[in-house]
Amino acid sequence: MNKQEIARIAAETALEFYKKEQERQNKLKRDRRLRNTKMLLRNYRKFKIHCGSNVQELEELKDPDSFEYLDTDDLAIEAIIKNKERTAAMVSYIDRMLDVYQILSEKSKKPEDIRRFKILFDLYVSEQEKTVEDLSDCHKINKRSIYRDINKACEAFSSLLFGVDGIRLIS
Image: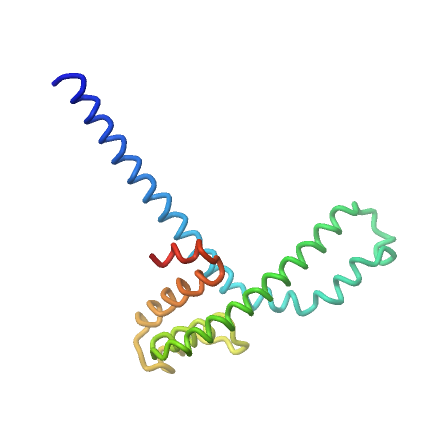
């Protein structure tokens, strides 16, 4: 084997390794987006409750006289205020994207798309929390199909939440 053949084999091996590493990184990124979507949805009800009391709490936190007795750093209070405002903004954004997802599901006219939206909504968003068993009985499909529908719905919803990056999740 001469030097050129060795160099060619080394270059091909390095390129193959690089491509596999890129695929692995892309899969991790996709997995993170899907995981983040599911995490946001699992905590949606808690965020909604948290935001329900935000208006009054924000007014109290912004009032400089309400914390006279505390020897606290203004930066800590600012951080709390910003956290509450970000949470409220995120809940508002999720609400808008849920509305868009519902419209898209209904426009598709495919029964499985509408069912997936309803399953996602009932499992994570609606005030009356339902279990997978409840949803299985309600839609007359087995539990495994419910889990598949949840995954498909979360993938579609991720594209709305994350825009172009979310689209890469689906492909």
